[in-house]
Length: 270
Image (spheres, rainbow, N blue to C red):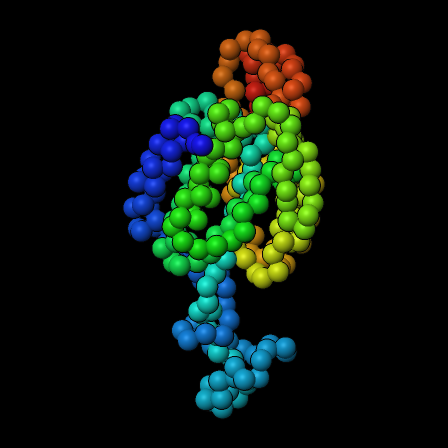
């Protein structure tokens, strides 16, 4: 049972993002895929390996060199949102945390997919895969995607004892609250490659406070259209001058003392 606070946040996001989806985002991601379809896009020079059936013989005869037609792919698209829910996402110096911003962006994508009759899926990850929702379409499914992002980390929705969560292919792992103390972006992308056989538009939403994920993103981008979205907070880039402070790493728990009055330290942080 979801608490009233989460249900209220879902409704607020639905209202707030409705106009943005209609005015700004809807349909703009469709153009990233090209292929055979009914809507003509452009004519370009022939490249070895192109389908000979796409050759434009009229242009070829006029120019004297082979040219092919390109069309906008008119098929149902699949969006996959990889949302970082590690402990560092709970930070926020203003009225909302980075996790709230992640949820709102996920809402924009989910409602945009609904408006375009496309499928959308969700993968929540930290040091491991927390939850995987296969891509489906429909407003009810989109609301579920938003609800899961918002509800994750809410004390009222989390179990107080250890339990097992099932993942695809019969893999099971032990889960408890300390599981969020890491960020493994490369592992999330490898998981995506293992569960999706068709090409998707993949949004990786994270603060990218992790290591060794660039090569994994390049590899995933060869099969999918990977879009990285950086979620950050102003205080992560510019610390105020307040003297000696104790700062705790949300993912490792390590506490260290820093002198924020030092211009050298503030420059290094920036």
